[in-house]
Length: 424
Image (cartoon, rainbow, N blue to C red; front, side):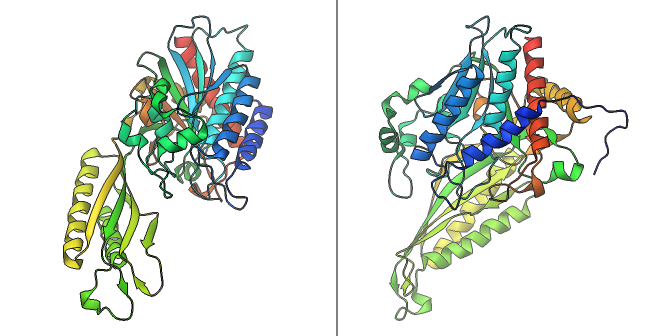
């Protein structure tokens, strides 16, 4: 572990706030589709319950809270100039399946705490412009396999083809919105314009091991890797497991297995690539029937846009070859394709100063994970604060942080927000 300077004296932080952050993360964790696993998906009853609780906390902090046309929760205080661009503190409220406790929601509850502190101090340090806390309803894309839906709708994602995307049960986003009580025809009401926001800052767990290895609670994000999310469908021919000779089979599952290994090989051959197949389904799904059709997900990421594009082309080429050799058809549907996103130099400087005040030094990190900051970068400068997580584990029930690190994140976010406010 790296030692801090002997003369370093960290800024004090509100221990009650740190305790509250941890308690609220646990309270949100209890809002799950399953008592045995933490799962909260977009446009579900659990989404509604979490949104209601977050709205309550926002109002307690002194923010006016509302749900927008996409299901995001927006808390706002106008400041002395209600027409000025707002400072946004944000993260997401949805989860992956069988998730950890802190991914996304740590950023939401820390933002609420920071907003509450800024509002309490407004008599001495008035807010010169609006402050918003935004809790995005769908970042993970778990239900509809399209990432950044919540923040995407805020930044102008209105294509009808997006609303037509369906979950594994065939329910489209449009249908799910209606069932949730939203109006898909009014999704454009969630859109905000360039000039609405002056800056965006997001607190998020690192989801990796670097901060822990460095012995630091916090890091400054410099950029976010780009990623492609896709669904691959393989169409072969179902048949009797006992009567179709091996050489005559058009086995979609065997072809998928070869394809997954080919995807892994492409990623391993690149210097700045990761590729994951995290979900697969086979039909008709009987032990004595050759799989006639499969569906699996593809997640491809890189900090280098050219490398990502080249890798995807190579994956497409290899899957075509496998399809030809095995007499099956591969269909690749790209759900999202984001480029690498750079954080704003001015906000990096603000966050560096905050990290130095809290822990004695700053550490720059590239985010391999995608975040809502990617979408907001289309409207305003973005910055991110990473928080150490135990073992670098995330998207896993073992995901964990300490209360002290939650307090450090709160102190750094408050410090960075105050710097943005003072600089105007």
